[in-house]
Length: 412
Image (cartoon, rainbow, N blue to C red; front, top):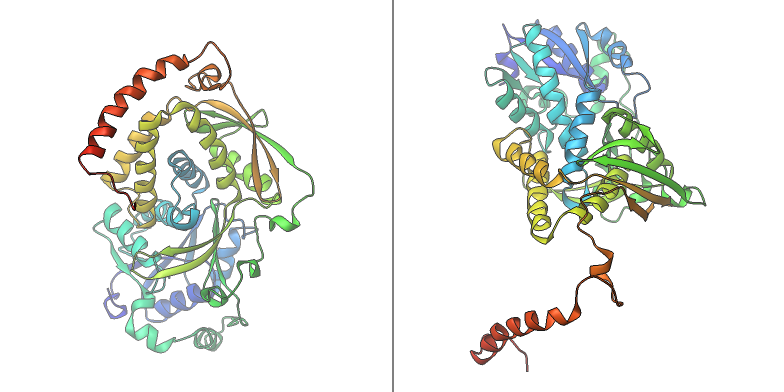
């Protein structure tokens, strides 16, 4: 819907406390629109105190409601870890996942306060506009969506940050357009994404980013750090021998992985809207737990289960990226992954060293199908090498038939 259609509506606007949020909120208030601001607490590592958002928004003339979604975000992260659902470039879908959790958590809070419209500050060129809109559509189809930065009137009045700052200063709100930025950031419990500005050029090194959850590998300690995690059916339940819930687990591994330079990636991804986007992603905890869980999966899944799992993993990654985390196909994929992950219980120990994760051991994995004797190249009580003769002969029948029929490609 358009700005001109908001009269008589109560707008719930998703805010961060930044220049854009202040500008849109105050503009709507000035136009006589009923506005309530909402922000999600997703354990953002770049926010020392989430209550600061409400303080920043207070001069804009609307109430700000903070909704605690830390545990919901942690549970969503566990779902992504179990699915190993990474998008282009090994990106752990931190932003896409956060939008799913945010809208699912904020919509009920908005409805409790009589909001009939959800407004968001996503630009008209990226993924988030589609995610906010689609999640509102599927979770609350009766709610309308207002996208300020697709509205012609607002775009004409505020073509840039300087115009926003000037407007706020005219109405008595302290504002600063900000100096030249090298990139923008978006953060939550799963990780940070860095994009735009200088990072839009493929001639710009990813190392211009200053990590906020950890360090670049070159700045990590000069000695390995040992780390142990216990999984039960694909879920981390203990770290270094201490029982943890999902939120405790993510906070802990973010610290451990971050200080060892784990989980920094450069990605050139395919956006929902058809363009490509360059980003640098920081997800130390997701990368660390994801690697460790993969070691258990390799021990408990046979070849066909592994192939199916990879297909399901790709589907979940694409669905979450596209703003379809709650669609039937996504839920069905998660249900199938639960079956494949059921035997994935074990204790994994790794060493972390300057951005690398080195396998040390897998123990207490009762449903492992790995048998050292069967795999041995030496004499053992495992697979009898003579038994392979019959299998090789059976395989040769088809091979020779294809060759005689001229169906085998050869450049000779």
